[in-house]
Image 1 (cartoon, rainbow, N blue to C red):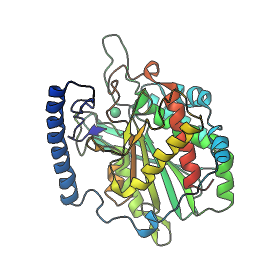
Image 2 (spheres, rainbow, N blue to C red):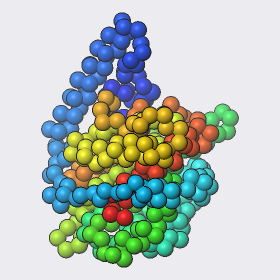
Image 3 (tube, rainbow, N blue to C red):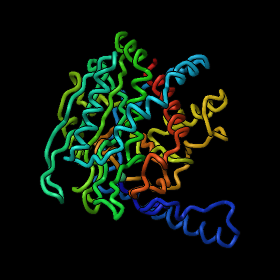
Length: 380
Ligand SMILES: [Zn+2]
């Protein structure tokens, strides 16, 4: 993904944001820089709002925003989060994904098969479809395939969880290493698979009860640019799928896009001390629920290496929004939560984005928070 020009800068290494412990004179300068960056960011926001209506052109329908979550008792929170199994996440889902998997590569096919097989082994009975297509890239015509998994296709509305399973193509480095993209985005994909595995029987129950709201998972291909990021060289899978879904009927009277109640995109997760900020006022109440769940799980003693009650989810948006797989859906009016670490992890787009630089307790904590979020949203 590419970071829009905002306070974080393109590389997302924390530049431009003042550290409160800095000496006063430097702090002033940094605050000035931050202010300028925010002004630039606001300009971008404004241009998004005005330039072709790219932020939320048609606006979501009432149905998309009227959904109410269910409150969970402390007992339910404990039981549901205890279903998350970090060891399974790591060995069954994450490790096999840590291979080179750029679109069209053997590793890409292997990881796609792992995703399809993992979903196929669950008792909830997922409908798994491939959205395969070819597109022109700076490296010639390349084949792509998104994996679309729907729990109950007959449900009226969908909570969508998305990640990208391709890795960015880099030539081997001088030490012969390939780019593995552990945070980008093997961990988010492993989290999605672990969530539906951990909640398998709850999801089956919800499906059998004919809930109005169901879950859909999108494992997107071709998020990364082959060359320099541009409108045509990036987001291959998300652009193709959004175009397809706007035309295809979900139930009579609504397209697959209109059936999306909320689109939650996970990206760049798994490193130590990450923070996630909200970029969309429209979905702020859902982001606030994530803050609330993090605090609640902390108080219940369910999170590890979590020294304060609010660590990951921060309401303030001091970084610019980031171009990522949600954009084609956002442009079609889908409400979005973009759960991406800002600033980007220091390993971003380097050969250091490996298993060794992940922080397992952070991965487990995020998984537990999201398990509780799903249970609230889907009334599990
Ligand atoms: Zn990337």
